Image (tube, rainbow, N blue to C red; front, side, top):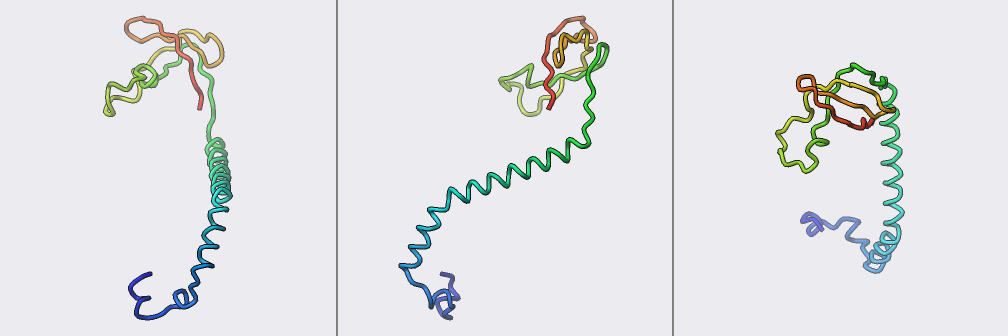
Length: 122
């Protein structure tokens, strides 16, 4: 109850019946799972709409030999020991060879080292 309802009786206070209130609360408890399911469905529909909107504007381009790519840093440091101020991407790599779709042999531009990395398209 809010302080104003103590002095001025509102219809909510005047018509309050504790038995009906408890029955209403029990009915709401029975419907909680249904409310959760409806909310999950709404979230899924929203995510599909956002995904469709985003994917309209995405133009995927396959990588070819000789392309320059950046490598995601968490792949190189999965434990995250470098901290949150570490760069998100590592220096550019050259695609040396396409082994199969989404799998490439990479080389650094200076040292001539070879790395094998699987490319994940989102």
